[in-house]
Image (cartoon, rainbow, N blue to C red; front, top):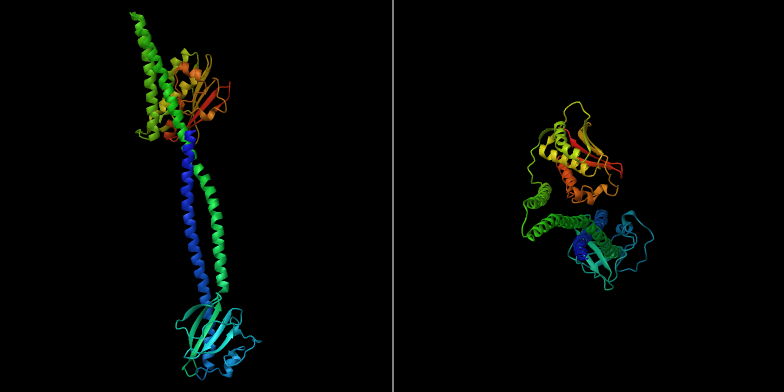
Length: 443
């Protein structure tokens, strides 16, 4: 329960950090995107006003005459032009040059050199001061909150003398509406996106914690198994010593039996510690691996010679089947490869009943040497097969207790195979024996 709470707290922390970082990135990205879109829209508005005012400027200057006065040619070019001294009606005719100005929200104003309004065209705002603004660009706001953006340019007459000023502007209502819609989109979209980020963060944190949790469980199981394996021989040794200490006199034969028992348990402890140390070094990759060409034909012969006496004692037929007519070489550590094959043969002997047989065969394919250890033992259930290479795992605990196994042989064999860029596969069925297949890259 406590470990689940610990991992849940860690998962929440990971999810919180991920959510916080992603939210900060989203807020910053949203702010940058908002600024970029605003600048792009504002730049487009500037270009549009510059284009319209430039066209009007180029079209008006050749026909302007007296400074500050609108002549008939200007009125003809700009239908709908309203002089400040007259009452104006809405224009009924449109010209191409005024296509933009005659749209809703656009306007044009003429001012003399002193800044007094002379004439207007389009839809100028009613509450803007007629005084000339000194800057080229102006953003104006009426008392009712409407905003306008305009450009002021100097006009010269056909004699190149200063005539007055032209102001071309447009309403910013569409622009402000666009910005309001953009802000609303970001404000509504950001919380929804953050909700998705929270869900994704929780899922990703769980995904990240899964191998950590699995490793933690393996460490716990490994620690429990090591403690159990160490406790058994220690308890046996302690019981033997206590039983001897209770005797007033100890005959020599019984003393020897006692020492043999202690030696056997001590050897079991030493082998267990040696195997654990070997696995730890392989995990940490601190073992110096001296790779050299190794002849598997000779190696298999040596293994079978060493274990033939054990097989005979167990009434098991142990044989070698070499399926290639030439020596097979792999690049690796001969001692480790010997231990790999020895562990597989030992495992086969332990789980094969009397009268059975074990065949160790050697073959090759295009890139790998293939070693097969096939027995007629009790077999392995399909649900147990993925776990037989786990440390301290035993298919039959009673049988391995009798033979003194600690459940590390296959784990060491797989670690050695992987250290040599190889692998071990298992094929088995209950009551039909087992076959372990080792594949090692050829030299």
